[in-house]
Image 1 (cartoon, helix red, strand yellow):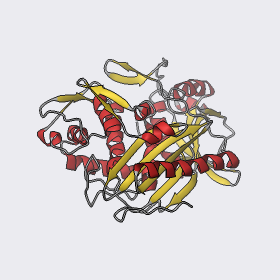
Image 2 (cartoon, rainbow, N blue to C red):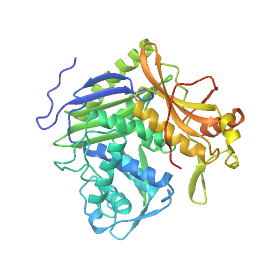
Image 3 (cartoon, rainbow, N blue to C red):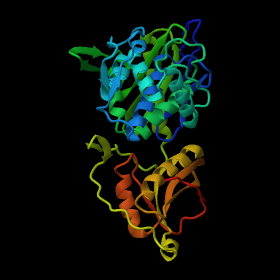
Image 4 (cartoon, one colour):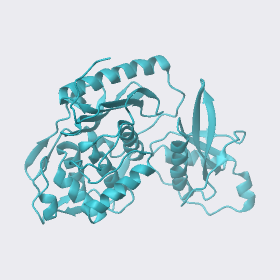
Length: 385
């Protein structure tokens, strides 16, 4: 084990997990609360992505810059009070520049005030399973009440990739131009580590150098988080060592037969994001005789944590129910190679419907498998929508 002389005010913590299964390949002080610094902006981005996906705004929506936002300390984009910035430029400003003024602009647009937005961030974090995280601002600037853990940030990274795969590509951006000025990022880990393609760095004196990163090699994607690095270079080298070991262990351990994920392909239509390449007309709600025949379903994934499986089944069911009224979500516990897993499934379909539902879900971050009527024993869950 490599030993570091960590900064006095920072508590060292690290974790490496499989992005798909949640399997832990490394953890030290993973649940120790520390200051997340600019890793906070991952949550700000999550809230922004969610607002866009919900149709509350688009990538072209204009966000007004308040005087308070313009006064935020560096790093920043030096936005003028009273000016506007598009949602897409705000995304790039948060990812590449880690701009504190942009974080406040987003917070005020979505939450009216940054304080109220921080409460919304905390509520959403709890809902995502980030049990030891509390936000007090949208930027990660010093605040004694702004605390998180390495594990919680890994969970957030998982959700950013699985909930908004259409936006994950922004985390790979290393530069962008705004108002004639080119801004360059300082995430050197993403440039130097083989397979790395995002997420976020962070630093304040009280936190040390933090990093949340993801990398994919062959069919394995890992997420690694380090809190409390002594320097950016030391932090990057340390996480590289941890993730190298994780990839080796993943290759030796093998992975359960999960359905492969596909990127969510979206197009912009009339200012909103919609699934591409699918034309399926909703059918009317079937009568009881048809309902009894609908014993088929689709499997959208398998997860090591039951709560995540339930969430994924419920979320997918909301989409499928818009087309097939009898659909419902459920989970099916199984044991694979001695490991407890939970299959997320959508049931209540006819055999013909499963093909159309699979086609639909293939345009989401899942590749589904057909579940025949003989599969039984799972618990039916309530879904909304």
